[in-house]
Length: 197
Ligand SMILES: C[S@@+](CC[C@H](N)C(=O)[O-])C[C@H]1O[C@@H](n2cnc3c(N)ncnc32)[C@H](O)[C@@H]1O
Image (cartoon, rainbow, N blue to C red; front, side, top):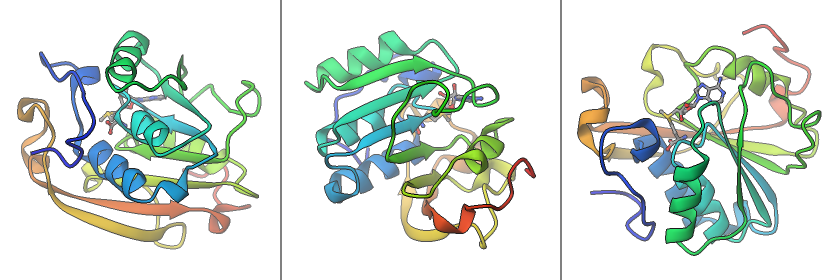
């Protein structure tokens, strides 16, 4: 059972972009239940996969959503966006190792990211962001062996228990029924950790 039954997603076949990942479900659920977190804002969904978080942000009233991924998932994201009747989700193919929103002409207020922290370059990318007037909400399914941040850097937001990736075959055994933790990133990251992780 998905946490976000109101969002239509193509989960046919076994591929990264046709999977509703547990962390993305939890972050999408949070955004749908707390539309004030994104309403009227320019949102980045970093490592968007099939775009479930980006679509949730759009439904919750985001002004514009940048759905970013290293893989060429634009067709899948746009198909899912269309199935849900949202028109302000813009896919861009970027690699965290070589990308920065300020130099790639992306104006953003809040960054959302689910289950991307064990990839090379993603933590460094997050630490390079200027959170002066911005924020981020990140979702982690139990770290997959690499804690995203230290307690010092994160503000626990809430947890969702027993979340299931769909289709189940796409998930590692340890994460088939996982607890997803959501954190805020913000002012504590300012000036800290740049390039250190
Ligand atoms: C486990 S999936 C999570 C997808 C989505 N956030 C969700 O929860 O539904 C991780 C995603 O991160 C993307 N990714 C991995 N490394 C990346 C990088 N260096 N830059 C941008 N995206 C990356 C992958 O292609 C994949 O779509």
